[in-house]
Length: 217
Image (cartoon, rainbow, N blue to C red):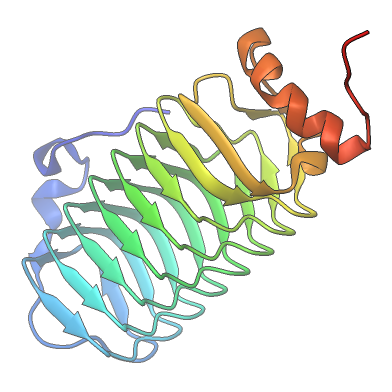
């Protein structure tokens, strides 16, 4: 999927209006530009964001549960302790963003791109990811437990202590990942696509999961 790196390349860039002030519960944000703003402990559950951009903002403890993001583009933005549980994402992108301690369980992500992002302790349990790309990202302690991943790819990304316990994978492409380190869920990799080299690296973990004892002689 083609995702611009620059704000000016967005098809709706010329329509964006600057935003000021806090966020509101069930707010309606259409063609809005959030630029260099800080949102701390704002409550904005159930809000709707359409064809909007977020640049160099900070979200701390922000409540966005059940919010909808359609054609949203974010760059250089930091999210810490934010609630994105049960949110709905479509045709959106996060470029060079940092997510730490984010709750996104039950979220639905369709055609979403993460590029050059850092995800640390992000909870995606029971989430549904469809045609999602993690490009050149670091995913540390990210929890995909019981999530459904359909045509998800990780080109150039590192998975560190990721959790895949009881996840359901379908055409999930791990071939481009530069590191695959799972805290659990090796038995949930059915439906993943890996390279021959990755398979050799994963073999000891897969054998241990299946209870296969490997010995010389």
